Length: 274
Image (cartoon, rainbow, N blue to C red; front, side, top):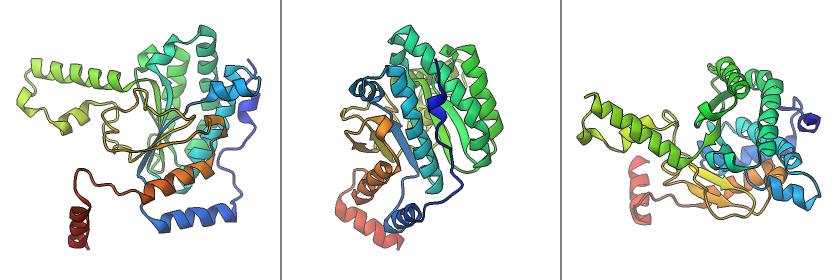
């Protein structure tokens, strides 16, 4: 499989766009930015079918969307970006497609790791990575190790991941701690569960984006997205760019995040803080 089309664009272009800089400045001035954005990157296959291309060509086209969104988040000083790259359910797909996806992941990481490192991006991986091919695990580990001390955007890749798997593995780990006498059942609370999830140490996503027009979260960050603002768009992932990301952030900034409180209570709370 020829993956050269996946590398037609430069990651973190050196030349800045004054118009884009103005948009980013306005976004920052307009309201709070989400500290953690999570994205369900959906629609590669349907995008390819519409254009008479193969599914893997759709996945290759999606790399440009990843590049632009990662770059935009870094430039906006977003702290965390989590991308749903491959779910546990995706293992049911045709073997040829899975193999091509894994090869594509390796090629992208091998080519872009140094660029991520130079731009202060830290790579983090969540999911049942023991299911991944050895070469994929090795390549991921190399990138994680190289970028582990970077302090800018944390790019979290969800691979062989599902929300149910995440909760189950946390439950099993907590059960082992109880059996070993390390903790008691009475100590189990939300904070403890958080500490055993694969996302431990990360804030919960404030904005969850799903592309392709589907209105579901498909077993992604089920525990963590309890209070996420969800943004759906009809755009297929290969056509998603920073302009659509900006639209999602603008929508986020218009929402009132009450967390169970009333609007009046929020106003009173804000007045006390001011």
